[in-house]
Amino acid sequence: MIDYIVIHDTEGSWDTTIKLVQDPTYVSWQYTLRSSDGHIAQHVPLKDVAWHAGNWYVNAKSIGLEHEGFLTAPDAWYTEAMYRSSARLVKWLARRYGIPLDRQHILGHDNVPGTTATTIKGMHTDPGPYWDWAHYFSLLGAPFHRTAGASGGLVTIRPDYETNEPVYTGCETAGQECAPHGSSAVRLHTAPSDDAPLVKDIGLRPDGADSTTGVNDTGARATTGQQYALAGRQGDWTAIWYLGQQAWFRNPRRRPTAVYGKGLVVTPKPGLAEVPVYGRAYPEKEAYPEGVPVQAVSPLPYKLLAGQRYALGLRTQGEYLWATTFDGSGHIVVRGQDIYYQIQFGHRVAFVRAADVRVRRSGR
Image 1 (cartoon, rainbow, N blue to C red):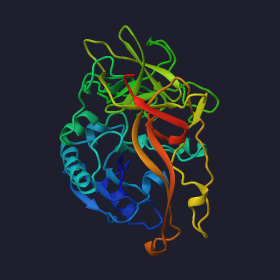
Image 2 (image 1 turned 90 degrees about the vertical axis):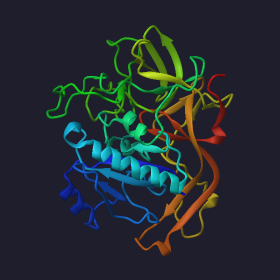
Image 3 (image 1 turned 120 degrees about the vertical axis):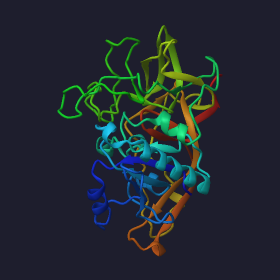
């Protein structure tokens, strides 16, 4: 079953990318889109699984779209022709496979979680903070709107792309400020102040160091279209639950960077102080047939704590595609009975076991 479409950029030119995807020892993806004119090349049949997301569970349930370009040079590469061509392709794929047009199912590569604690640091960060998600979803015919009042319990990140210019560093030289540019992302602080430290991501920095303003640092970033549970308000600041902590971003009433929404959230079941968080949905041991090795269940280094809420994305069974060769005739799909929920946990999505949490309406 296809649940996701994953948006990438190539971090390379068209010619280089086309050569790489023809190398059988390299990674694969379904489509590449050319910057200059939006031309689409298909590399992998839609019936086949491609290796593109860095997370085998997501790979087995997704279609990957690579867009020619570099995330640090959006004006040179993220063209209107490519946006429009990509949106037409995604709309067609979404209709074919019944994929909802929302940020729980249309993921950036930078929203895909690592499968285990050791893979978090190596996860990719494209298409980056300069990809215009608001414009992209308008082209998809699914723009982000306010769906509730202040008591709705959720917020949808939606800054004005042109005027929202958080400072990023490292576009050309490490530590050097990037040229001012519109962005789809807002930066997250530990308190309602620009002077407060950025929130921490213990997966990226197990030593407890603060997140940075680096253009490839996703540790304290929320992006257009992502929905989070409301955790507080103070003046021009709004707080959300994020990676097990309260995270604040500037959201002035006269120039809002988020809109209110409503929906379903998950929270630990009564009596549980914390709930483990996973980078994939695991089948239970009993679901594996003889001859298929059982995946070791490996929680991520984060916790969903009592009293916190996270926006629910989709409900799924634990699943594992066992494939040791390219020949699909020998592949086995292991589907368990254990149910997981996908949640918007940080900048990346994550999964929790349904048995550990309860689902409730966001405004309650």
